[in-house]
Length: 216
Ligand SMILES: [Zn+2]
Image 1 (cartoon, protein in one colour):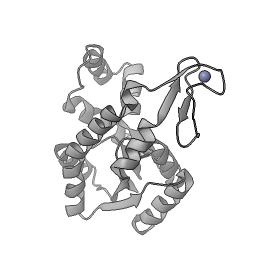
Image 2: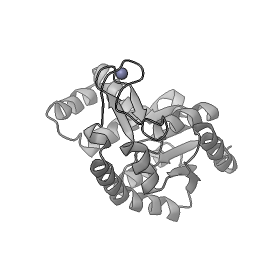
Image 3: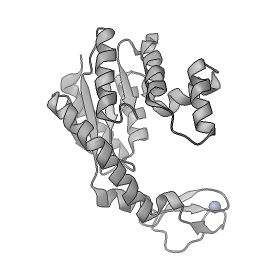
Image 4: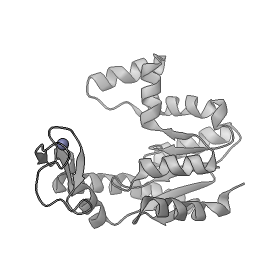
């Protein structure tokens, strides 16, 4: 199965990507993993990407696309894959479609993890990090009433990334980029949405049921 996974920050996309890919016996291909593999492997693309990253700049689209192309050409991806983090926008989706058709293939399905904005804010803005051991606690899920780490006694704080303001901003950026992508795939009749609230195993189960009609 050739599958793209999309979902907002805080939807548990990384975890679900891993479980779904392993259930379907297909490789999980995330842009983060591809970047790291190219950089640590010292490839030409990795060298170029690293120059941008070292300067704190975004890696240009064409470098990302070339890395994705290389990865999708590898033997383990010939019978299917789960893409996580690519495509990010409609132009990239068009390029992916063209790339796959050159390989004589096409996407089977795009799975969207659907989580309410307020639920995302609750999940992410409720996180507290221990300044001493780095453990992450949650004010609701761990019923954390004080700001002391139960493991090491360290002081808990809220990371800048987890502040409500930052989380809401990330959600806005996500909506801006992804809403057109989601409607692109809806128009292509590839989009399936899954409720991504509740226990992790239940979400995986729901996803597997939603994907069953698309299995070979
Ligand atoms: Zn601690």
